[in-house]
Image 1: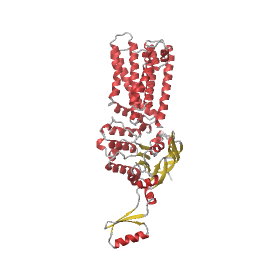
Image 2 (image 1 turned 60 degrees about the horizontal axis):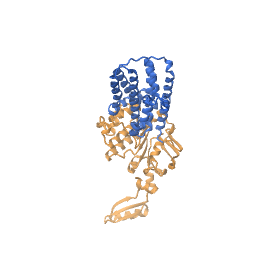
Image 3 (image 1 turned 45 degrees about the horizontal axis):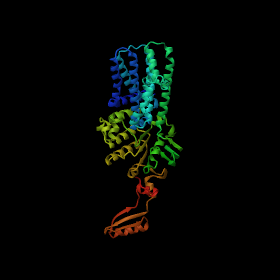
Length: 235
Length: 281
């Protein structure tokens, strides 16, 4: 890996993003939700915080990443990147860093607004890292399989609901087979582990969920690199 | 002989359609090689295979001694590409776009100013790309392709969106790069451009190479061996390019009847039509 190339891609993303109003608007969605939930009192504050964090991962990490990748593809700049001396890892790291920074900004602002005491910070950070990498991968995959930005906007929807906002849907289908299937969604694992960590539960109570989440992340990474490799060939 | 590109029995089939059929040619290092053909003849497919963006169905393709499909990231730094679907970051300025690629290719950023002057865009460097004309964008793409002084440069219709003055500038830039050792693989519809720039040209028609030689050699090969003369009284005559024809011209000169003499040398466009039976449109 070449740090100069990665930093060049990050600087490019910064120059490009600062003029991208659509992406900047996405940053406001979780912050707006945090403001709303902070006014609903202290009951279930931790649940609301994890809920807002999932919104941040879905709308900022997953959605923004899919749009950034799709735009590169639509404007024919991705091909130039893939045909440059930068390798796939450098491109992925460079292109994802700004999305991660925006996600962190939205999470930190939400945390300040909601005034949550963060127990088990190490576990929360681990869940955050696994989830961010996975959601970046999902965003990248959707961006790569779509032909243009409009198609990305359509394709990303089922991924946002099934992978990002599954705990909210699960609430309505808890007694049916739909709820059982959704219980394997990565966002359900993110939610359960985060809630357990915030409530101070023992590590053993959520270690299996952590393994599931790590498994999802590995599958996401493999899928992303396979698709990037395929995209460097135009047939 | 050192070759920049070696192509042997290259074939590409898309579904039922044969895009390329047993295409073979070599491009010497430092050569400007023109690949001429009408739309749909297989030019872009060839460029994509040569640059490792597309896999061939059969045949061997080597670029700088390595199979094109196995080019590593470091090898990609030795080539420059400008195709009809190249894109730019429209929200960024001209300078930011080029500086980004300079960093990717580990080229000194001072080179950006140099190339911007060469393509005549030094005064536009702080403008957002989306505010520029199609011709200007084409010049930025060319600047990007040559920024790192590649060993092999692939150009797919590089001057199609440019006005004559800028075409001339681009030609000067390409000839300067070639003098410094860059091998250029050029596809174009423009016969004058090919005749002016290329050391050798190949005519591609329906996925096959129909003719391959230097423009001069092709003009000699397809010359009709006749001379057209125009007399002062307005008459036009055609004489053979031989002793009898020379005698006739000499007679008209002695009697002060001769106005003009034209050899019947065909253009590359004429030769293309003769070889393939169709125009280069």
